[in-house]
Length: 137
Ligand SMILES: [Zn+2]
Image 1: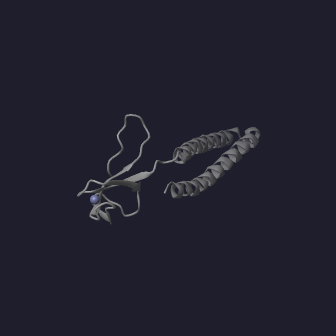
Image 2: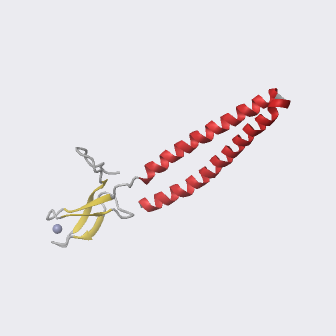
Image 3: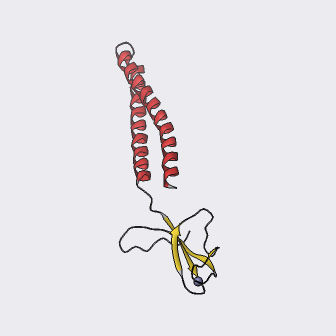
């Protein structure tokens, strides 16, 4: 699941990066134009200079924001765990979350007494001290 998240993030970020670099290129072009126009038309050059700086600031800002978001996404998400319990004998089993799991869903029979087991909890294992797992979604 974390892998599909990461690939989606990469796809989105490459598109965003393209826009950022186009904006950056246009901003630089505006700055170059401003320098060229400075001698002949300083009044117009000021606008291009302003436009160039705005574009530069904007693309740098977005680039920074995107980079931060990607870095956050790259931090590996802890796995989602499903706890299954047998109501008859109390047998408890923990396994990785599977698509379609929900609390109180009846799943495979108990390994001990063959009674139907139910899902009692679905949570993400947060590896932080003194913090209870986030219960349930
Ligand atoms: Zn049982």
